[in-house]
Length: 326
Image (cartoon, rainbow, N blue to C red; front, side):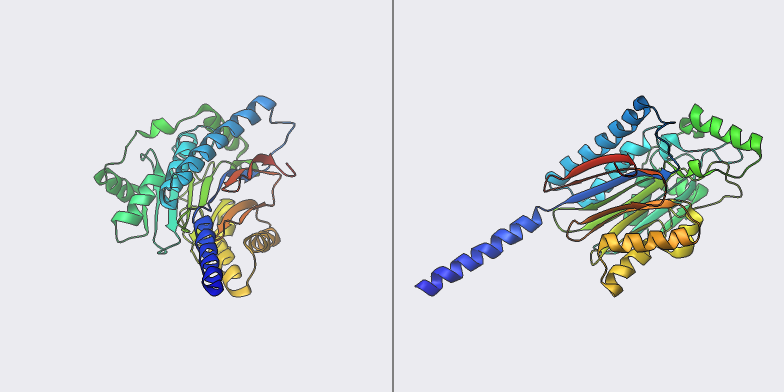
């Protein structure tokens, strides 16, 4: 009889632990990393960014609490930021040298390692949705330019004129760079958006969306739509989204390398992100990264003066920040 009681208690404990694990979730978002100064960003502007980050974070939290899958959460959260002129993604995309907006996005799910991405699109209102459609409804991973738009139309996504993406602030940034005959400045790294999620089912997903680089030429494509560079997810390790000077992230295979460091060197998600940021710094690259592992542990690392970032976890932990040491 005593043995049966002990066995029953033991089995109940396993059930409770399992149930607790199933309710575990975590979400991390970023809105770009770069050179930021508290002196040059007034309180009103900071409040705008934090309010939008909070809106996106709250949506993700509610969806996760209600049992939504990681893929859906990533897409809906990124859409909030794509629809805002504050970030260099969707509505707030920067201008190319030719004065148009070109957008990139990618998504990857950790359960199946399936992925989808679009690059160099001009008329898809929410590129992250196009990336999702590529992942779910095509045999490909990356579609670009007019072909990506044609595919998006067939999937019923909203198509808009390129003028939809016009914002005065981004246009003036281009004019300043053209006037100074410079390719870019570090401050133009800021604005790329991303989201990584661990849902209550234990699945991971990562997504990234960007307008690229101000004054970019020749159809340049950065790391954001490149699986393994700017975005990566694997249930065995982590989900990763990057922001910064994309050329360096591509050269490093940045996002996939974080997963490899966890898999082969047994580093924690935070240790792996820090290790990769060190490699970025050694190449004189700038930027940041967000990540979450299968247990809901998170990382938000960067080597710039700031990164728009936020996270929330099922245990009640929550944070929204912009500058270092906040």
